[in-house]
Image (cartoon, rainbow, N blue to C red):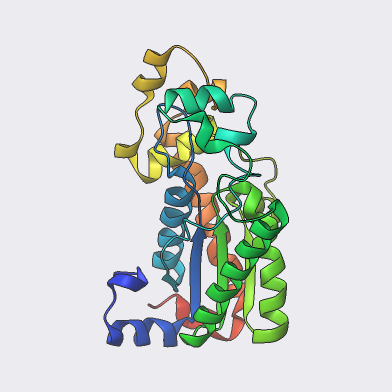
Length: 253
């Protein structure tokens, strides 16, 4: 059954929402994840996990929020120790990454803009008839923004919600200590979720580990699948905790 909001017809949206009015909103960014992974790994990972959770436990998945994050303070191409190397390998112009390149004001102003964007998402989710929201953040530095906006959504919209990345949902389920950047963890997950998007041979051919974990070559789809299932189970449980009055219905849609 289709769970992507943008692909659903009105009758299907109504039926799924009435059964379990939970919206999944994946958060991501576009940045370097090594030569072996796609630039959109964060959002792709979060979206695929949300889809599995919605298929298994009810709810609808909205499109990934790809844009609007404060790129001058949380971007591999700028903030990582290997930022200049990444820019070179991407064939980009370093002049285009100087402070202020986004022309969006100060770092504080950029953060405020992202908070405002997520707040608009919450308001839209509420207006579309959902009673619960999960922000699954594939780009770890954005987590506290989702949680701050989530607090506002609870208080001012009456919208039950949770925000965090896949390692945090596992930690809340009693399995802490997971997460990395383009290393064994993320690469294994994507190999399980979207196998055609990963090419470990590209990393072997590069002969270097720029902007990615050295353990990435140990990645396997089998390990990724194991943890994907654990994450999805935790997401389903969280959704039912948020909407206990609808939890029984969610198993039948």
